[in-house]
Length: 392
Image (cartoon, rainbow, N blue to C red; front, side, top):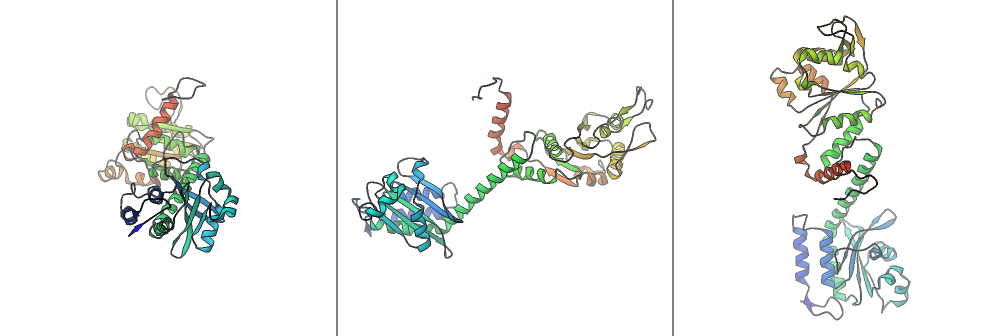
C-alpha cells in the first residue's frame, strides 16, 4: 500500500519504515536499540522537525528523550513542549492533533508552538498494560502532518510502548543512582578514591555502612588497588576519626622486630633496647591500626595478635604487665589467605577474627571505565600552575 505521510510529500511505502522499527525493537544490541534512534526514524519517516518522549511523573510531565531532524543536538529552547496537550492526550487516552491552519485560535495560545514556529503537532499516548504512562510528541515545521503521519506515529506508539516504558524506567533508575552516588560522595570522605564503576560504587557504599562499626575489617586486593586508601576511608568516616590512624607494613619486618613494632618494648628487653618504647597498637589508642600485608606475619606474632584481638590486651616485649587498649584493627593482603590457612601458614582462628567484615577491591583491569577518571584526577593533582585551570 502506498501512503502519503505529510502534505506535499512524494508517495512512499509505509511498511519499510515500520519494518525497520520492528527489527530494531527485536534486536538484542542495546547500542542499536535506543529510544533516540527509534524516535529519529519516526521523525524521518513523517517529515517532522523534532520529537520527544514525554512521561508523567507524579503530577508533572517530564521530557526524557528528544531528537531533531537536522542535527544531532537539541538546545534547551528547542526542548520546550506543551504540557497542556500532553495532559490532554494522557487523561483522555486520545491522540491530540493541532495545526496552525485548522486550529488557529487555540494554536496561537500555545506558547511553545508559537516559539518553535511549528505548523502542526501530534501527541500520541504511550500505554502498556492498560496504563498510559506518557506520549510521543512530534512537531512539524513548514509541512503539516498528514493523516498517514498520524497513523504512522500511532503504529509506532503501539509497537514500542513496552520497550519505551522499560527504557524510561532504566533512565529513571540511572538518574536515581547518579543522585545517590553524588550524595554518597558529598556525605563521606573517601580519601581521594574516584570511581564510577558499579563494583567500586558498591564498595564505597559498604565502606559508608560499616565505617562506624568497631568490627575488624579484612581488605583483599591486588597490589596497587588502593587498600590503604580504603583503610583510611574507613577510619575518617568512623567515630574514631579524631584519633590516630596508625599504619604498619608488616611484610618489611622480621618476627622479632615486628613484635616490638606492634606491642612496644621495655628497656633492656633485648640488645639495643636502651629505653622503653610504645608500640603501634598503643600509639593508635582510641583510633585505628592498619596492618598491611597481614599474611606475612610470623606464626609466633600471629598468636600474640590473636590475643590482642580477643581480649583487647597487649604486653610489651620484656614486660609482664598487661595493658588495656581500645583500637580498631583493619588488615589487608594481596594473598589468598584461605589457601594459606589450609597450608598451615596462617592461623585459622586469626583469619576469622580478622575477617568479621571483608572487603574486596576489584583490580583496575576489571573496571576500565574508571581509567579516565583516574587520569583526570592524577593530572589535576600534578598541575603546577596555581590560579590556572588545568589543560590537557
